[in-house]
Image (cartoon, rainbow, N blue to C red; front, top):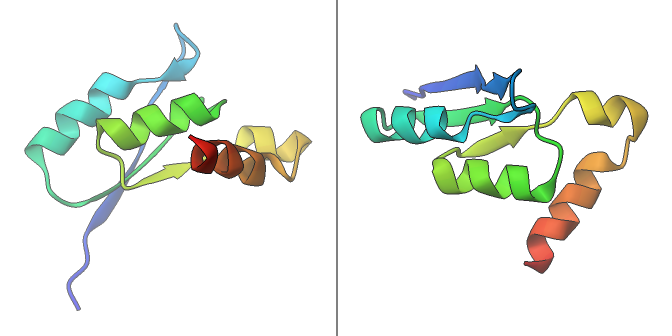
Length: 80
């Protein structure tokens, strides 16, 4: 089985948001499985990463304070 994927932490410390443009640019150049993370703080951030070309979105920091955070974001995405 040949699998290839890569993870990018695309946090932008100036905007405190993910760098959506970086994911768009990587997706245009490479067909591999793409996991993006970094400053994902809302369902909107996650959706924008998916729209930019991410196959999977990683969420870490907010889950330390709220173990249900990922379920909440997933629920918000499903409702849209």
